[in-house]
Amino acid sequence: MQDAPIILVIEDDRDLQSLVEDALKDGGYEPAIAGSGEEALTLLKAFRTKYSALVTDIRLLGRLDGWRVARGAREIDPSFPVLYITGGSGDEWPTKGVPDSVLLQKPFSPDQLVEALARLLKAAPQA
Image (cartoon, rainbow, N blue to C red):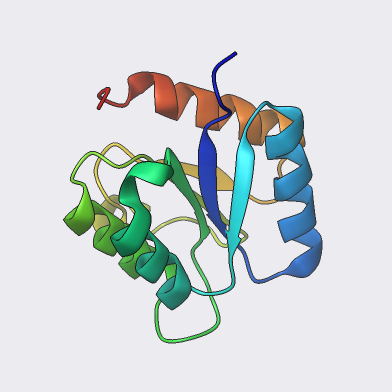
């Protein structure tokens, strides 16, 4: 049996973080939680090949928002799969989002998250 893909998750709302974590586990993924955008980029720089995708909230505590974290991830790997989650309107996604990313509006169901991630990973170039 192949190991579950590890998904790096950045969500500072604990309740939503728990929902995302449970949905990913139920969907056959292994979530890895980063407490901030800065921590996520440190992990990606050190262990890029460990992670299959990034799921990030757009509005984060700390210096880096989800837009900047995703751009940093793409500097490390230009084809790295990115799924944004937001409670906002998402109007900035066309200008601030990285190409070939997915935006999921809150509230969303666990199934919607898993389906969006599965489509994103299927479309991503294979390493």
